[in-house]
Amino acid sequence: MFLVLAHDRRRILHFNVTAHSTAEWTGQQLREAFPFDQLPRYLLRDRDAIFGNDFREQVRDVGICEVLSRPGSPWQRAYIGRVIGSIRRECLDHVIVFHERSLRRTLRSYFDYYHRSRTHLSLGKDLPEPRAIQPPERGPS
Image 1 (cartoon, helix red, strand yellow):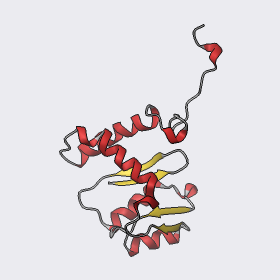
Image 2: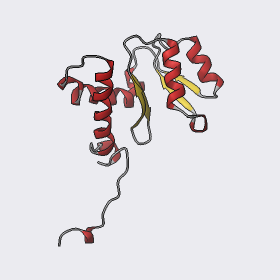
Image 3: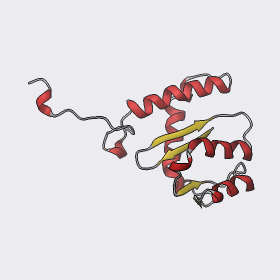
Image 4: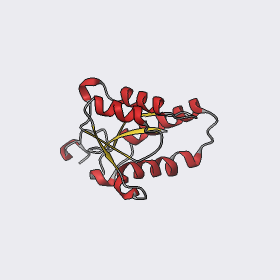
């Protein structure tokens, strides 16, 4: 699974799954995640082998600054680690995945819940997709 997370609101910007990840596939996911006019300044990532030379060249060519986490330091990727843990505990521990399409459909449904219904303590019990708060005078008296 490939995830792109925006740190500011814990939004999942892009995801995809494959049974056999390669550097080319990972580079394609990066291109799909960010249209040319919305490139991030930084890309925080681990040192997984799927981020090969081709991937690093693509990142460099579009002007994104790569920040690599140190080996054995998961706390440096705390936000994405927390999201992956939530996906496992709240979603994947409760379903049987048969194939890539099944996993993609399950994750799409979970991410809809994650963005629009699941409150986050780190966001003051708000959602990654902010919602309008109704003033008290609109409620029952």
